[in-house]
Length: 59
Image (cartoon, rainbow, N blue to C red):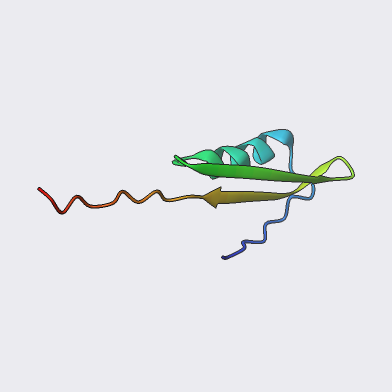
């Protein structure tokens, strides 16, 4: 797991919404968690799941 540190201090609502949109972009299975502290968004975490289909060896 990797973390990217971004300075959200002083960012407007549009910038935060852009970051949330980027986290959701292309996500098929998973979740986006937004952490708020003292009324400020302090972390956006994306968890993505990959579903693997078993191969059918009878064909």
